[in-house]
Amino acid sequence: ITSSSDGTKLAATVQGGFIYTSTDSGATWTEQTSAGSPNWFLMTSSSDGTKLAAAPSSGFIYTSTDSGATWATSTAAGSRFWTDITSSSDGTKLAAIDDSGSAYISTDSGATWAQHTIASGSPYSYGITSSSDGTKLAVTVNGGFIYTSTDSGATWVEETTAGSRFWYYITSSSDGTKLAAFESGGYIYTGTTPTPTPTPTPTPVVTGGIVPLSFLAFLNVNNAPAVAPTPVTPPPTSNIPPQTQVQYIFTRNLMLNMQHGDVLELQKYLNAQGFKVAVAGPGSPGNETDRFGRLTYNALIKFQDAYAVEILKPSGLKKGTGYFGSSTRAFINK
Image (spheres, helix red, strand yellow):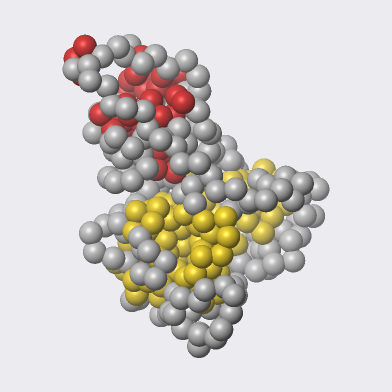
């Protein structure tokens, strides 16, 4: 979901459905069907809410210049596994990232795109944020560092002061100097760029980058003290030879953002079949978790696409959805 700066214009994506827009702060909604119903995943907006950009988990980026009434397919950036997208306040500069560690930059509202490498080694870029003028960008890498750019994504600097972590999303102030990012199962980190002059303060200042602030506590109730989340510890690896292990039978539907023991089993299955959730850290072989995040989602889509005839075709689908429903479950359980 995304919003205009005054909060009156909203736009939301529905997985497996259409885009919906509101011009009265969400009191009423209009179904926008012109872009179709791919597996919508991401959306961003200009500050006045007229220019929108949306992307499915796998496919092309779509743009609108009339608050979502009509849409154009932006094929110049290619069909990819998109992980995040952001916009300048006027909607002319767009920046999107995919799962291969590249940033795709447009300076003409999505008409043309330029590809830039964020870091070598194809890191899994997870979140991106932009200053209001689109010149300052910051990207989180899941299982790596935070990267910043001051030239609209043409060049990138690795910010090591916050460490290499399993970063998720990141956000920015309008001038791009203040950043906040959070890691999987851990802390929120805040920082400033360019480097501020260190001054004595009770909060430790890290020169030139991100400094730890507090635990993520948005689920904290009644102003109770924030408590560090307990890391999910994978169960011990079985000593039973693979060919004699009892197959796990899946009995429930699973979807993005769920937390359940079946998710851990699904991650183990995907990893064993070569559709790795992650190369290292949470979700990687031997480090599976019970959280259905974007890494699990993308791995499941690749698995569904690989077995499209068996899983997707019977349901009239052409592309993986990232939803672990009856057809995928039946295929795995057989």
